[in-house]
Length: 118
Figure 1 (tube, one colour):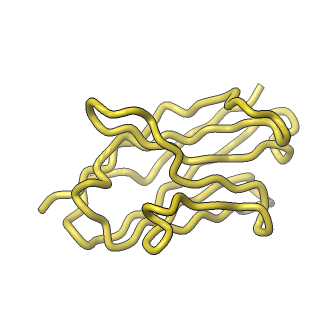
Figure 2: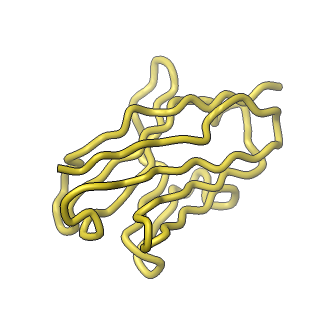
């Protein structure tokens, strides 16, 4: 079982920055891909970024010029650095985990709200 705890969300002004953290713990957590999804009201959940290690990571095209994903292997904490935030980035951001090689997410965090005000 893997536990995911997100932190770092909040209210930020247009153009500001936030860093989200996802602390992962549990059995063989180092073998899991950690990912960030977001869901805005009335919209489907979308994948924002994922990371296995520094050589295996990706960020959605829609945000890759503003967001970066990283992972601390020692603590199995994933980070999502979000810069130049836009109003359309407002959403609940979820950390997710899937065992490497598997297609489906197996574990979800509780989510953290990010609100960008204009």
